[in-house]
Length: 348
Image (cartoon, one colour):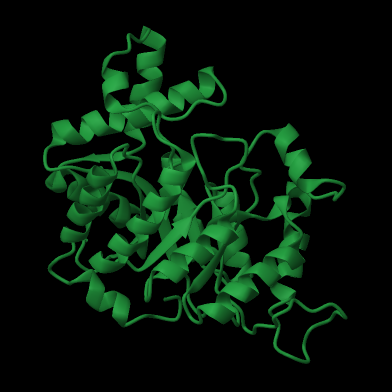
């Protein structure tokens, strides 16, 4: 692959909260970003799940998915991901049944097995339920059963509203083991390059090699979710990206902080160890001017065989974040993204 013209592009939003701002403002920005992504022809807009993390206002993905879907008209909207150990499968089936009923053929249900928080908070979320990652396979099977065709459900309990076949269920992960699980179950797969870029190629090769067709998916389909920041100049992109790396450092040093703005990062004196940590975090991102980002993404897609890139852009200024997505979309202008999105495949 020598360019990005055949590639489908999507958006992942963790709804970052920056110092001097608020979660409410970030949530409003998320709705505007979804509308801008739709205007630019992005295929889907997914929101994450985090808890007890003031810097990320994504504690309720189902609620936010509904708000984004209501604020848009055509872009697919989904979870990236609902963290299944935190929830009863029936609850998720009913929430996404409501969303699918209100927004037919537009909702994606991305599922993950992490906690999205610290162990104590995870315990509070789960309450008396004995739900952990060791029960993930059982939970996933139960969740899928609630979307079974009428007459085929092996249960006396039904998710209401009953929706069959239900929204596409995606498995999300950041390892070869999660890729193998998605392949075994015949599910579309989204790999978190933003968390573990080193294993991306191996994971997607495992997924394709071990994929088993299922009633939900005849052939493998994989997304790479990568951290991407595009600016008109590489210097500006690097400046914006440093505040994200600084935020990653703060999350390690002082729990409960929101994300720093670039001017705060520039005014901070860092130790050698802290600078090295930030450089490592920046290295996991695809950051630069359009030409530099194109080169990096072409390499990622060529190595991994990804069908779609989902960009997570952690930029403090909302205007600059929208500009980043505009520049990213322009990299596929030889085959307009909007045209490809309109001719949706089975997965949207």
